[in-house]
Amino acid sequence: MNFSKRLNLFGDEIFAALNERRLELEKQGKKIYNMSVGTPDFHTPDHIKKALMEAAADDQNWRYSLRDLPELLDAVCAYYKKRFHVEITPDMVMSVYGSQEGMGHLGMTLCDEGDVVLLPDPCYPVFAAGSKLGGAVPYYYPLVAEHDFLPYVKDIPEDVARKARYMVVSLPSNPVGSIATPGLYEEIVAFAKKYDILIIHDNAYSDIIFDGVEGGSFLATPGAREVGVEFFSLSKSFNVTGARISFLIGNPEIISALKKLRSQIDFGMFLPIQKAAIAALEGPLDSVKEQCRQYQARRDALCDGLASIGWEKPNGKGTMFVWAKLPGKRTDSMAFCMELMEKAGVIVTPGASFGPHGEGYVRFALVLPPEKIKEAVESIRTSGI
Image 1 (tube, rainbow, N blue to C red):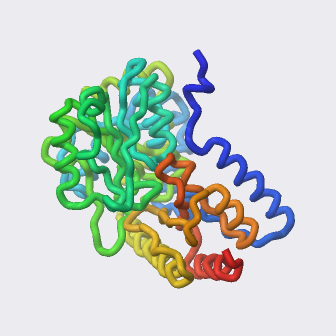
Image 2: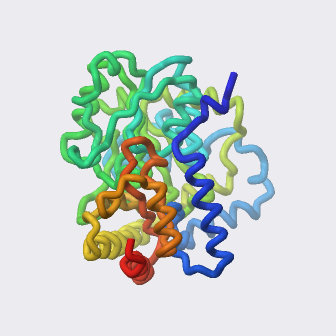
């Protein structure tokens, strides 16, 4: 079995080349505005850190956990009811070490060699990796400006839909920054029922949506729990990215299947991290809402700033990312990113690293405060790019 071919993914060489050149420029003392990697720069709430530290002081918590604590599952269920108005039960929940790990193993759980899966293009690379690890054949449905960078199931050929095992939907969407519109999830559920397709929804950014729109859950849609599961992450909402705390939630049969695979490769989430997750889920959400407000200020600084220097105003309705069309009728996103880094010191991610329909765009991560973002925009302006 040739794993190198199976894992020939978007962006492998691109990310390596960008990082290598960044290190060289930093050694030369060039001022760098790194807006390429989506690692939040906000503080983790104190009550979450306290829960982890207190649990870590107990020797009993350093053993294998072997399972999700019942109180953790109950906390997820209570949170979904409070936050999303969705009733779920503990058999519909399991923890994963981040949505990325969960998505990677779900393809191995659900797919047989040669199965067809429907993936967005552009998409986060693990969507493709997970399906390929399961031996599946991806069919990429485009996310394009004409449809507001949203899934458009009417354009998926019927012969492809009839073969599809599952479809990945990611809203709010990384990298393109789109959010679900009224009726979209209902359309996707109807599509899934018509062709007997499982929907896997990535809901990592439900708390980072702008302009007064409130993020929700795919599982709130009538019929969604019969045809789908959802990855729900604490990483971005509570700034616990390194702790890798996420959950797969939804159809109990899918939950049970992934648990079976995980039982062969994992001995359970570290108990102090489970305690930290409980503290996040049961604690106040004030910091989450304030953080969203600050992300919006960053979005505004970037999008308004780029528009003021001649760029087409980028798409940034949600997530901690902004999706920007290359200025000046340029089309090569990798070449543009290298030039932008060399001339302006601004590091972003080429759209091509997220799939063919990402070409002609770049992704900015909102990981700098507004004043630094304004500096970066001014550096772009004065660079003459």
